[in-house]
Amino acid sequence: MKTSLTSEQIQKYQNDGFLSYPGLLDAGEVAELKAAVITAVTSMGKKKVTGPGVEMEDGDDFYSKVFTQRLNLWRINETIKGYMLNSELGRMLCQLGGLEGIRVWHDQALIKEPFGNATAWHLDNPYWSFHSRQSLSIWIALEDATPFNGCMYFSPGTQKLASYENSAIGQNMADLFKVYPKMGEIDPVPVPMKAGDCSFHNGLVAHGAGANMTRGRRIAMTCAYMPEGSTFNGQRNILPKDYFESLKIGDVLENDAQNPLIYSVREVAAV
Image (cartoon, rainbow, N blue to C red; front, side, top):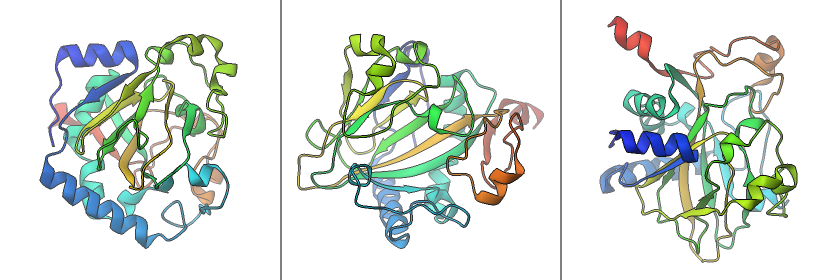
């Protein structure tokens, strides 16, 4: 895994709210991670989230046809865990976000099936159980992602315009711009990728993806990360029922079993 960053890449991420990063994984790593993702996804059947306490399954609604979505695969597959919880990746994420430490929020396989629906414009962080202007995600292409099969699109700089209001990923692509009209005045940037490329994006930057107009799958593995010290905002999202009910607003989310710490500047300095 390539985890080096230039000062120019860090600055571009901080300005635009996203960064296209070619060659994160080599061909062998792509094959290894892709096989692990397919195995893990297949083992879950229709269940969306690993582990007890979160009962979410695929249905027949529009959203279920946007992508096959399976979350927290790191819990059931050691290969996926090795990639998503990699400490050098954690260091890289902290460099991009200007952070001292970072935890996993959740990973998710996002497979746009043949002729899958488009992913409407949305923000990520408003869905989650913490609010942070520095949360971020990695999106790894395990198949080539193109404008024909649903590559990512980002609206640069929109993280600076966002609050924690959001719109659902529904049938109307532009609903987010009813919430944030100024975002709709910014030209989106397509980010096609070869297998092994990735992108990083801020949890408040506007992004979406087109429909898959092909007969093949668009397979991606992603992971969302939470700045160390983030606090509970009252939303359950995918927290297990028992853990959710034990929290009160303002509690620090530091449960290592749920959200492992993968990198901390303080811990590295103490070694």
